Each structure stands twice: as C-alpha cells, then as structure tokens.
Length: 260
Image 1 (spheres, rainbow, N blue to C red):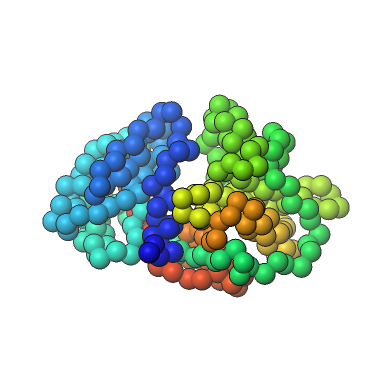
Image 2 (spheres, one colour; image 1 turned 90 degrees about the vertical axis):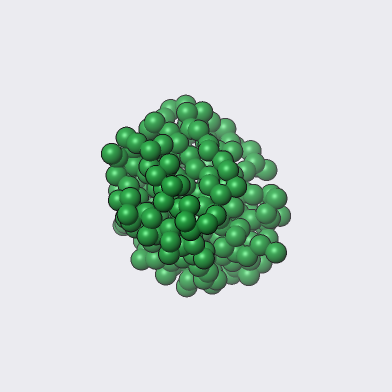
C-alpha cells in the first residue's frame, strides 16, 4: 500500500503536462527532465533509486545533461538520502527549498466560514491572467510561461473532469483578485496534488487562501479523489496547512546547482 509520501512522489513522475521542448530520461533508478530553457521545474530529477555507490555517477550524468541551466533534485527522505546529499554536495549542489509533505482526506476537511470573497474556477483568459498575476506578486517571481503554454493550459483548465484545475478568489467589494491555487488530479492514485497556493500580501489573513483551498478540495471530491496533498515550504505554507488539519509526513528538499 502506498504511503502519503509515496503518493506525493509519484505525482512528480507523471509528466503529461510537460511542454514539447522537454525531454524525459526515464530508467528505474533515475528519472529526470531536461530543457534548454533555464527553468528549474523543467530541469529536475524526480526519482532516485539504486545503490549508494552509484550515486556520484548519476549526479555527474544529470549535471552534464543540465549544463547551462539550473539543475534541481527532489530529495525525499529515503534510506539513500544521506549518500545522495553527500554526492550532491560534492558536485556543487546546495539545499535551497526545504519542504514537508502534508495530506488530508477530502472528507476530513472542515469547510471554512464564508470570507468576503468569491472563488471562481479558471475557465476564461481573464481568470487565468489574474491567477498568474497573483502568483507572480505573491512569490515575487515571473511565471516563465509562453503564450502557447498559456493557451494550452487554459484549454486544460476548461474541462470540468480534466486533470488540471485552478481557482481565483476575488474581493466581493473591489472585484480584485486576492488569492489563487492550482490542483492536478491523478485518477489512478485517487489523489490530487495542490500547488501554487498564494495570496497577495495585502489580502493575507482575510480567509481568501482558505476559500481557494476549500474550492479545490470540493473539486477533488467531485473527481472522486479520496485525498489531497502538497509539498509545503517549511517556513510559509506548512504552518498554514497544519492549522487547517493536514497531516504531516516526511521532508522533501530541493537541491539546486547554478548554471555552469
């Protein structure tokens, strides 16, 4: 039986969403993405297995494949983690983004009190642009998506029973977008991955994040998922989801190598 940590890791193995310019290298002991664009999520190692003695060779392979772009490893808390971290450090990688796995059963989530906002599912270009704008402001980073990728993304979001869903909370008085969050459905796992949950600074603490989370969990229930989860940053989103009843699981740290 898969543990919550297993479920979350396996969501990273499913690459149905990747753009056409991304190559997937897939072996039982190693799975990673490669793209000439300098975007870490498109140059990431999502699975590492095998003997500790083989890890320096695997790290060297990936570093060479990712030459010229930022390289990233997702390091989960497995038996080989100490040896992998040692090999990564020796190759110049450094831990950059500590997260922890959190999940909750869809029937265990308690709906929040009504906030002064209304949540809309992304189905039109306006909502998609608002969602991207909120994320860029909240994370203080550009989205890096191309116009073609946004069109494809919007097409995917429009399907009620599709795999990708996104939501935006709008202020009931001003109509301004306050918060957003995405979700990907993995039918074979009966699981939904939550991602990009973010709220503009001036709207934090007003219930918009909880409203978007509730909309995503309601959608997960409609899709017959039994559990939702995320990799939550230990200093920001982890305390929030813990207060909302999510169960805490194992750590997962991003290890990054700058472009060579």
